Image (cartoon, rainbow, N blue to C red; front, side, top):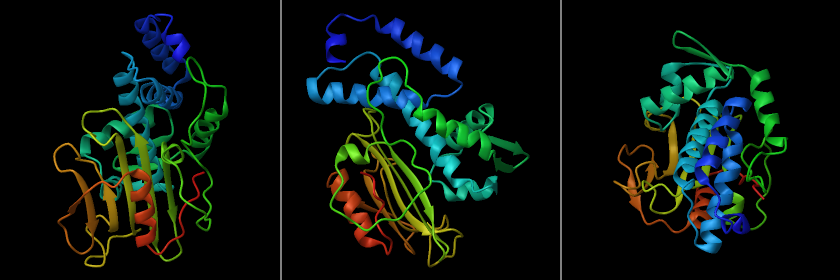
Length: 262
């Protein structure tokens, strides 16, 4: 990629081609590969391209859709979905419209049903050869999920692109989402949500959205990094220790085995 940038590429042409490929493929998963490539280009060579902001915005939209999709277990009412997600109404609505256009979900009134066959096809598409500018895939989707004993700390590269959810027999779940980003809304360079909660809200043991313990930076540019712990409805503002350190802290504080992301 570094060599390509030195050849004075026409980035307007590249952006048009990316949009065309999105239309042809009917999905945007491959853009996340480009996002990682551009991030490494900036990190290793201090080069920022005109594509960076557009690619980052598309990637964040992809991850929001993934987060919404993971919260749908077969079929779910709109109110339950909104309660399970720490996203704005507008973000959820945008994700649902996009997932419905891709035929990954079906929406009937306020009931939302996952199309498992289309979902599996979409997941399978990440194994195809990625298009323009892509040279190394990231861990975008891991299915099915397994539990592993902890075996050392992951690297930042291991965590970048992680989006997983696991439900347990004690009616709790863990939902984790981590990605690098260059958006001004995330001065730390990371967007993340590390959530441990109940499948059904049960105040005061949980918050109203089912949270037992959650770290997130959904409002980093205005509020900073937050820790939500039931039963206190007000989050605690924390110092961000780094993504790997926060990942380790989260797993040390909840009674579940850490996901193996390496």
